[in-house]
Length: 228
Image (tube, rainbow, N blue to C red; front, side, top):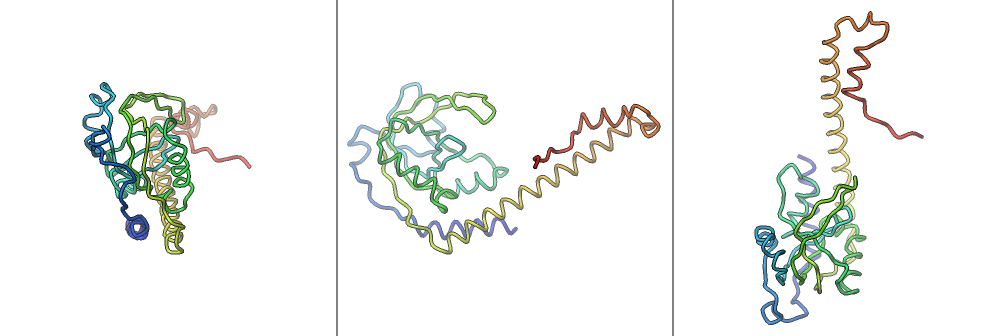
């Protein structure tokens, strides 16, 4: 239970630092955009992308891999980063290459801030829905509905407090512990599978060619370790 408590503390500290302010522009309806939530964008994404609808969305931005994503709130960001097994949180992929220099600069600052890089930055974005091609770390591509950002309003996070920095460190440590525990569980499962495989070769100890060991290791390879 240590990790959820640490993240809750981190959530509280970060929440204090980002307060709502009035947007610097007119209302969405006055500017020709339709105000919509992240959840409703996800629900209506295919039709929105087909008609290239102009929308206005407020949410929390965070960089995931090489793609900027917008979530409804800070809690959804935290759940996605640290508790992915709790379910998929609604999110919108953002294409920001057409956005203003000021907004892109703000998003870079968000990515590099020790606190906001963990829980995101609150932004309001306006643009049109479209389809974007995303590429993962293995080179595989997929086409998803996205928002092509045209302009944006953002809430710049202040310099992190000592409490925020400590909470961020603890959150990273908790994540490292979680990953180590997952690796330990995976190795236990591999060992069990390996031993069960060997049961199909009861005489492998007297097998001069060690066929059983070779076959079972191929089916259950040990984890690789980085070379020095």
